[in-house]
Length: 249
Ligand SMILES: CCCCCCCCCCCCCCCC(=O)SCCNC(=O)CCNC(=O)[C@H](O)C(C)(C)COP(=O)(O)OP(=O)(O)OC[C@H]1O[C@@H](n2cnc3c(N)ncnc32)[C@H](O)[C@@H]1OP(=O)(O)O
Image (cartoon, rainbow, N blue to C red; front, side, top):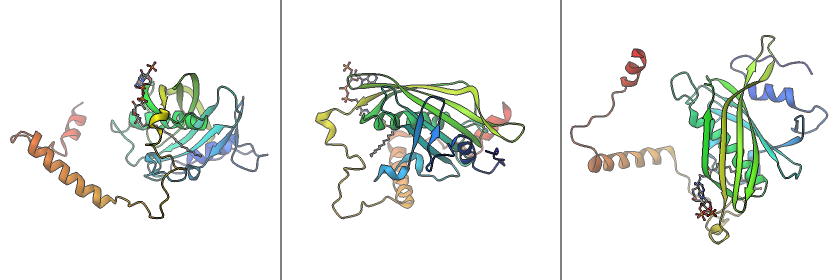
């Protein structure tokens, strides 16, 4: 397979995947050294308004894979393109919350696809190296152990880098290491949660909240918080305040 050439603005996700895809396979399975993993389409989730899928490719685009073999220790993998639009925390660097979200997403999906209808109860992330957008990362998630309703998982995030010859390779240096505890829903409380497959289908479409609704609601919320919490002398942070701080560091 010839190595894909990648420009700065092209999707490294697809280019990196092209390096991994097993050409003999008719669908988008990828092979790792130890197992074959199957791509999970977002469409498979049915009814879901997913946070990580809401902003489009300019901000974040990713592909998700889970191992199909029913071993005791399945894995999940994300290959993600982090864009430049709304992805920064410290200027010039990817927000740690985004990196954490990708790790949480890989671990959460792994838990669900392994049959655990579970919620994140605890998430720990060690950030080992900064990332600058645009960036392409790979997340490897695995189940460490289970104890009753508790599912312990871990995820490592690696950057995919462009080599001098234009090929893409996964760095061996970890960007972030995450561990988590997911708790399987209590049977007694499960009926209160609607999964995509069991969401009520009463014929009526769910009313969607528009951006205008959110803006209106935010204004009302801010106004009431100001009245009850803000001291009269307080002012809002000047727009350029952070720029000034940044320039002086
Ligand atoms: C074909 C269809 C495909 C569908 C495909 C779907 C795809 C789906 C993709 C999902 C991808 C999601 C990726 C993002 C995942 C989120 O974002 S989940 C959202 C964020 N998390 C939450 O909202 C959870 C909020 N917290 C809660 O609801 C509750 O605290 C929990 C976690 C459910 C636990 O409550 P609970 O069931 O009442 O648990 P409780 O009985 O108190 O405790 C059980 C045990 O856990 C321990 N425990 C509980 N919390 C903690 C904690 N934080 N730390 C340590 N121990 C704890 C307790 O000590 C207890 O231990 P034991 O005494 O049994 O030894």
